[in-house]
Length: 462
Ligand code: NAD
Figure 1 (cartoon, rainbow, N blue to C red):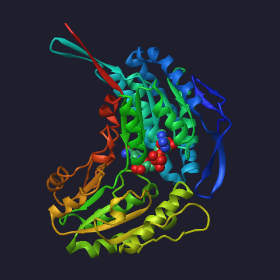
Figure 2 (figure 1 turned 90 degrees about the vertical axis):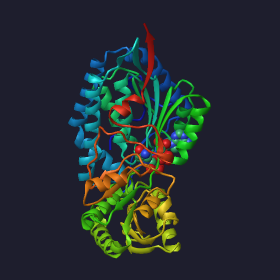
Figure 3 (figure 1 turned 60 degrees about the horizontal axis):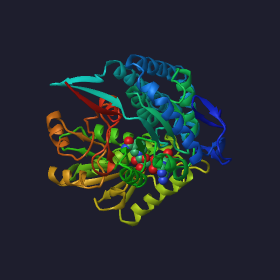
Figure 4 (figure 1 turned 90 degrees about the horizontal axis):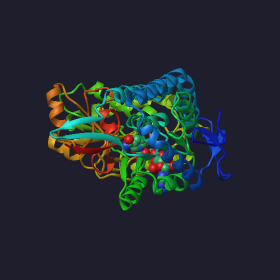
């Protein structure tokens, strides 16, 4: 795999300040496929200085020109989509068809949506005797996870660019090659020097240096709640803006009137997709007690069909963590109906698609984010009981409701403490705001709501 031996700072690939490197491993066969430099606070500082220097010019660039650069960026992503998919498959392990459709496809849609928004958004508005200007927040420190390597980057970089902000990106250590490819694409698209900068490196070193840097105006973080909490505290102490997209433990609520087989099959597919490494996955399936046994049987059959068709999880640590949760589920009395903790093959960080029945709301597998292909099926007595269980975690990122009548599903969804709900299998919408209630985060990404995270208002009175 192609890898740069440097950082992309101020429009060029420059040698890293230190000599440490990160090995990139293919999770499907455990082979080292590349190394990239592990950045230090010195690299981060150089990148932030470049972003600061580029800010006045980019902020003053007319929105139509920013839109043109974003259109060019989208076009480069389209032209290089096969390379993107192959790179994501190599460093994340997801099956190639999924990488093509989702890991390459979704960022193209999101980049395109921000090209449109940059061209059409009202960056200036009249409010009574005032003119309100929506101005860029400034220098953005973007810290991203590995689970959707390019999507997580584009969901921050595209709105930041549309708003007129400049960016220092610190991607996840497991998937730096996709991030390097993105920096190349930005360069090819004519994004001016210093507007987008990339520092690869470890979270507690490069990530922390970026989050703590006094010249960063907004830290936009996607990752675990544990790290997000620290970043939020650091930003709070510095009175600095912060956006946090954190963990989830979403509920898939199947009301008694729903098409049970469809709801269960789509629910299982949702959890197994990307090997369960999706923050918004519906990892808790809630089924009425009268339909419970039938749902469990359907889910077990559906999960067994996935077999080795799902990819590995990202690394050995993640595999050990997921297996640990499966063992804990068994120890706490959940009934294993598919999969289990044993390794399904000798090489690669694979975990069997796993389904637990007889899960009660207080069990660890029903409360904590596992981030692997593990589904818990819970039983409810009536709608109020279902709502109590659905809302009964510290998270509130996503969810699903199924019912014969859409109005019935919507009424239930409106009572859920969560940022988005798919009604009867509703499709992902790249323009709809994405983000969490409760400990799933602060702020929203995607669409116009995502753009406003990178803008601040200035009111002029006349
Ligand atoms: P993580 O928190 O370990 O890492 C995320 C990023 O933060 C990485 O780039 C990492 O290098 C960096 N980081 C780690 N420690 C840091 C520190 N002390 N200071 C600054 N940066 C640091 O998370 P992960 O394991 O890479 O990703 C999985 C998590 O991300 C899951 O909890 C998942 O739910 C969450 N996630 C949330 C969303 C969302 O939109 N809400 C989307 C995807 C993933």
